[in-house]
Image 1 (tube, one colour):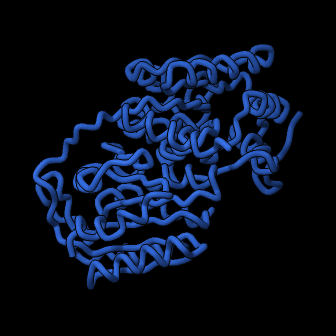
Image 2 (tube, chains in turn cyan, red; image 1 turned 90 degrees about the horizontal axis):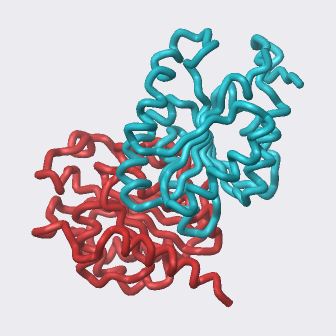
Image 3 (cartoon, chains in turn purple, cyan; image 1 turned 45 degrees about the vertical axis):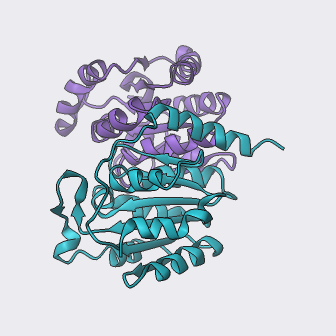
Length: 181
Length: 191
C-alpha cells in the first residue's frame, strides 16, 4: 500500500501497511503515550497515533525532551514509546545517559535507521555509520524491525525487556520494513 | 530575594503536589527543608525537569505538578517551553529560579545576566500565563499560590540572588528517590 503525504511533494513510498502493523503492536503492549519528532519514515506512525483517541501524542521540539516525558509517564504508571530518527537518538544521548540510565528509567525507542544500505540522501549517511556503534557503546540492547512477520513479537519483547530491566531498549526501523520501493 | 526563602515560604503548600526539581542548589535546598515522597530531584540531565513535569501532567491531568527549574537548565532546553505551550496542561506550574548564573559550577554568568528575558521567551513560546517575581518572598508566595489554585499552565520567573548551599550532595540516593517517587504516585491511585 502506498500513500502520498503531500500531493505537491515527490512520492514518498513509506509503507502504510507496515506502519499500521507497528502501531497496532504498540497498542497491544498498552503503550498510551507516544512522543515524536517527524521524519519521512515516521509520518504514518505519527498520524495513526494522532488520530487514536486512546493515545497521547507529544510532538517535540527536540528528541531529548522525550526522555523526560517518558520518565514522567513511567512515574505516572503510563507505558510510553519514543519515535525518532537515528539523528534524534544522537541528539538525546545526554538525556539517555544522565537520566534514563542514571535513574533506571525504561524507554522503548523506535529509531528509524537512516543512512544505511540503500540510502540515497547523502546527509543521512554519517549518522547511519555511527548508530549501531553508539548503541553498543551505551550498552543499549537493540534489534531490528525488518520483516512484517516478526514486528509484533519484537516490539512485545523489547517492551518487556525495557520494563523488566528498567533501561532504554531500541528497535531500529529498517528500510526493508518502512520503504516500499 | 533568596531561593531558599522562596522555597521555605511555599513548602507547606507542596504537600499535595508532585514536585520535580533540577539538580544542584535547588535540589539541595528543597531537600534541606525536609524531603517528602512526592519530591523528585533530577540530579543531572539539565533541561529535562520541565519535560518530566510535562510527562507527569499529561498522564495525570487532575494532579497538580510543580517544576522547580533554573535559568541555566531552561536555557539548555528552550524548546520545552514550546512543547509545554502546545499541550498546556492546566495543572502544571513551572517555576524558574533565575539567578543569572550557573551557580553550582562556580557562578559563571548565564545569558539572562546579559539581557535574555525568560519571561518574554516563555510568553512568546505560547505559555498562557507568565509572571516575573523580583520584589519579595511574599510576592513569590502569592504568585505560586495563584498559579496553584488557577487552572492554567503558568511559568513563574523568580529573580533570586546567586547564593546557594555549601554542599549539593544529599543523603538520599538517586534510585531511592526515584523508586519512592513512583511508588508514592501509584499509591495515590488506590481507592
